[in-house]
Image (cartoon, rainbow, N blue to C red; front, side):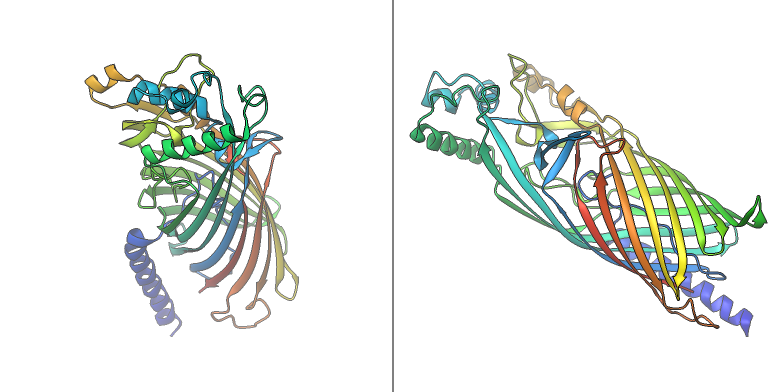
Length: 432
């Protein structure tokens, strides 16, 4: 009877994961190299003799600031660079042959700075599963579905270093500048003000090779593994006509990763763990906005507001993840806590102009600043409280584990060009 039950559990898990992977590969996603929403890997709460783990986790996220560098705060969308309307006008002159700003007032030739005040609100639900076929072999997946609302406001930057007309502009001039900015955005087909995205993200499929030992090296239990996975770029991508839109994954890039993990039970109900991961997305070519070369060099246009549009090949840099954690289980009748730190560093992306040769001769683009700002890093502390409904039972059934996780951005080590997003997750985990 026990053998029949084990075989049924194995086959049921296979059907669940295969069906989920097939359906999810069309629908859901989960990825970790995203600098707007922290989609961080969580360790499962391991249950003795369980071979299958399934998790459903609704989450809520919010951000209105970002880190330019450690302890240097900036508005959210300045991840792409500071907005200079004067630079945008010069780009219009180079690409379209006219400058709406100097057409209105020929003396307005310097920088005209704006502060981009924006925010992101996200609600979603993530799915994950893992099944152990053998003691040393497991397969699994991660996925999500998400809705993101974004909004943006433009506020004049009156700092004389960023605004050459702040001391001489009348109220009528300020109104005219705002009107010209809106007209320029309209001509570029840029939709500013509010953005709503709704859909799926990337897929993470993997297999894990694992080894376990009991009472070895002064630990009660050791569980280490090597994970090899594929990142399927099936999620929502950033729209070039919507400066507020964000990718739900790796912006359409497929990739692979390898990670090593280990859990060490120091004493009963006290576990320390460690995760290290390296991922790499493959290059692909698609249409993007590209800043044009301008002189003087301080005139720059953020990539998401750039005038020139054409094909570009983007080769993403590698992403490194380091995440130690501590778990205290059964603190009181099934109640437990987890403290986790996640350090992420993304290397520079490489952009290559793929426009036709004739187009390159008409307008030259400057991709160095875009590549420079593509380097980012994040530090997150995750606080989790969980309750295992099956911990106190003599014969465990399908009782779930309920958890609540709060992801907090910090600036301890690597925070750079990344959103300060706080995220609250409610998790429901099943083990059988």
